[in-house]
Length: 246
Image (cartoon, one colour):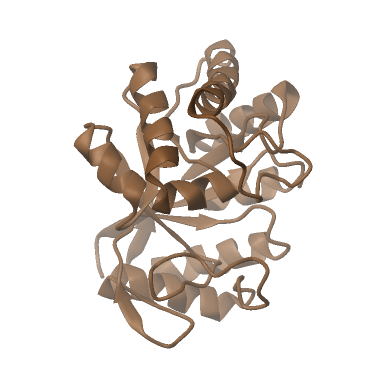
């Protein structure tokens, strides 16, 4: 595993308050921009921290649903969803311009991310938003997803993402947060989970199967109560195996 590098990302600016502690361990961040959480003040705070730690900055748009933290699927007309997602990204772009920083990527949040994985209509809206921006910005997407296929067809640059602290079903969807085994809480389990994906290109699902997966960026959820300990140990263990974070 010598000379292998990966990216570790975290969802930040979600009123958890652990950004300063997480930032030294990650290489990219996804900043909530008003849909499910976040406002101008929180965006500025996270952008300043990201600049300080040389962490790549991404927008983290969601369904406009603060009450449910963007984790409940919403039926929205395509035009309304397009406007909402674009407005959220533009809100962060305005902050980035003021802070003299640039946007590296976009990663949808929660239910929007999960819907775009399987639903063509939702995926197309997000891809159309990306096209409308006319910026050299990556889209973080799951492997073998509908949105990955559509983005590739439309020549939007993608980076495959997997989740360090979430369990997978056999179809590569994430185990529902309604289930007790949705999240990984143990430091060793998280490391083994990620290292298997990095070294073997496979993810162990909740049925015990090892399914092919591709990923270059791995997400630790900032709202995971054990996020700081998990990412600290994960980075340490990966480096000991010759995997660098960048």
